[in-house]
Length: 375
Image 1 (cartoon, helix red, strand yellow):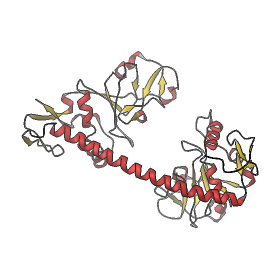
Image 2 (image 1 turned 180 degrees about the vertical axis):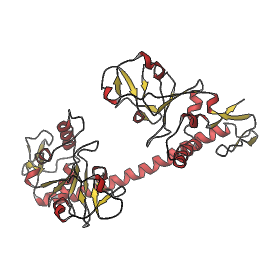
Image 3 (image 1 turned 90 degrees about the vertical axis):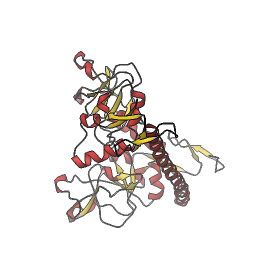
Image 4 (image 1 turned 120 degrees about the vertical axis):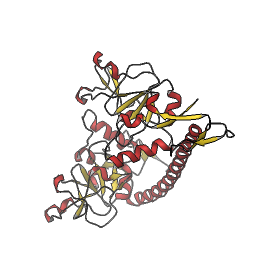
């Protein structure tokens, strides 16, 4: 960004760098009040009566989500734990540590433990400090070495920020609101486009594996609803006819480490039809667990959770184990079979069957999935 002022000076703060000569820096505690959340007993939560309680998971995308909100009976002694309009709420521990949301209504709400309130009249400018690279790095440094990431109220209040005049803060806040709104709109459009392209990709795959590439070939009814008509010279059979299924091993997570031994692939490591090693864990090698070692070109499948039914192909000869609720589909036809798990039919199966049965998938239910073969 081009210089907007005639003269700059060193702020003395590494993350800030140079600032306009007439600006200053100070710690957040000079312009903010911090209020820690209250340790509610979760047994007192209910889904629809009383005062809402904002928990860490309700802080999403710089806003407060009420989708999974819980309620407690009103208690006048807990008034200090109520959020006010324009309060900045911050997650103080867990995977979303340092994330903020603005409370934008006058309605009564409590804040739960490990959610903090930052109360300031300069909220529209101050809130932007929590999305800077400087604050993100500060949170990562403050929480380094902890089993669970966390940051204290003292650490938050000691964070240094640039301090232009109130008038300039208002101008900067207005500028950022406008620019960020434009950027968010572009992100939304991009996400909608990605969703449409993913849907198109599924349709292309489904069309290719159920109808083939020859548009002029005679068709016949497959007898399988999701497949519909197929080329006359094709047939159908269940997946179990062409693959071996291996369940993962229930490793003790206390034995995991970050850098020594054999990698263990968990459900969260199956991403975008590939295996991610970004958050991989390791265990000591054990010859008795050889059957749980993945082979090159094995198809790995998530068997429960938010990513149930997602697959990744393991494309290395290096030794890795699979954890529980990850399954191995081993077949010589892996390059064709993997496409079956991206069809509309299989995706519907992964969503419908657990709902109907009120549980996660069993290996046998994957193996009876009907697919096609060519004579």
